Length: 138
Image 1: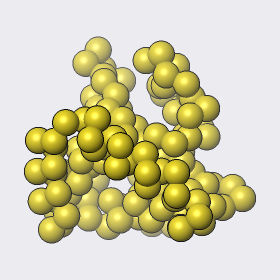
Image 2: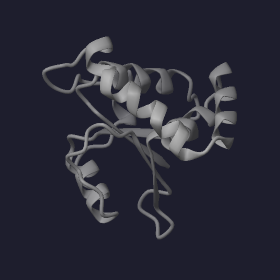
Image 3: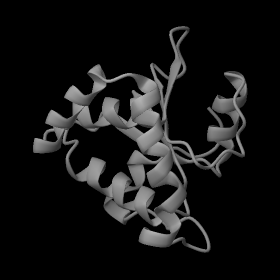
C-alpha cells in the first residue's frame, strides 16, 4: 500500500485526492492529511519536518523495512504514473532532473491557496471514500 500525505486544508490538494480516488479503481493509494498524527509520525521517522505543509509526500511500502518517501514532483509523478487515466502519460516527465521538476512544483505550491483556495479545516472524505483514509498512527 502507498500512502499519500497531502495538505488537508489546500483546495488543490483536496481536488488531487478526489482525482486519484476516482482514477484508482484498484485502491492502491490511501490518504492522510499532513495535519494528522500518522503523517507526523512517518515524516519524523524519516527525519523530515511534519510542519512543512508545502510538500506532497508518498510513503511507498509503508510500514515495511523497505518504506521510503517520495516528495514534491517525484511524489506527484509516482501517483500519476500508477493511475488509469490519460494523465498517466505525464509520468514521462520523470526523465527531467528533480531540481527542474521541483522548481515548477514549488511555483504551484506557493500559489495554490490563492488559486484553489484554503479550507478552515480538513474536509471530511465522502462517505464512499472513508476507507481510503488512514487515521491514527502508522
